[in-house]
Length: 494
Image (cartoon, rainbow, N blue to C red; front, side, top):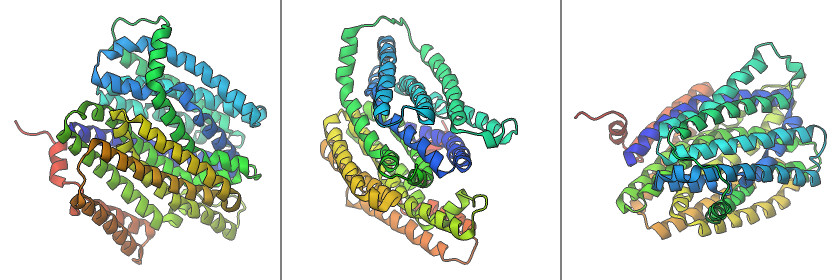
């Protein structure tokens, strides 16, 4: 199972590293440059608002289904018809809730209403795609799932490239609705492809609404639903609070969003670990030795990736922000540097938050696979309380920087609690010698990046040198074995 994990995560990372960074750093960044911080900040507030209620579309069904199919593939045919009917009902419920709540928050007219409509539709389509993918993941068809994980983005990139750079659409008339509609088309095509794959592995489908089955599934899924809702609140609420608490027409939310962009890119990659690990943990929980090896391997891989990204982004924060965001038309150099400084103040805090969040994709997923939802929900509830209380205090005074500090604090606390609870319940072994290698690795990459940063070379060259040396530190500090990786990736001779 450990070998299976390494091979599939490499393939999954390869595809996503080809596609998703270009979407976030190319397409999404260009959209914000065209719209400006205020308009894009408003869009981000509406997008995150629609995401807060995403759990109503799922109620934990996706995680429940992935776990159930992994434990017994016959559950795919047994549950598919009933779960699909439930998803349709939940889609209607979700639409009603976001428009009712949006009405009371002032999202009921003009552009904000249109944004809410398109964001809501895209969330519904995405929830169906993820549900279909949960069946594919449960069957351990990871190559199919890896392709589906980027397919919608590939289509959306093609459409947005035509809109932004083909010359067929006047950029002066560009608006965020075009951006959302391109994603809608991509989601619909991906949904059809995922449905075809799932139907090839199902038999004896029955689409008759069974309220007893509905009730039983919801009973089992509610703990998952509560967990996702709580985690969504403490992970996604900052732009909404910035837009609601500050009377600046979304400017601070836009600043936060620019600094958040690389966090989002990294998180999209880290989240793939959770998607793949859930069925794998569920399948190995009964084998203590195999589980222990899988936990260590997955944690080492994600910590190596997230650790290097975080450290290098902290040291090169100013340069990275300048690379991503050019001066606006008629903007003076002083105004540009001031604006970049605002982004650079928020950016390292969010990357620290990204590092903490990445570790939860191992231990949180392990607890989910084990069914320890009560403990996870208590941790998530604590995260929500801390997040809201701190943001109400710091946002009016420190704006986007305060929101980023809150995010870092909450993610650090919840990550530590999840590790402690997982170790106590499942009793996997991570002794002092293991943590010595972890600390040695983190100190090594920090020292290397600091020393390279002081070299009198172009920052991009220095960045490349530091990255290569830090990748070598993964093997130098024995976080991962080069021989092990080569043996897992290359086929063995018979």
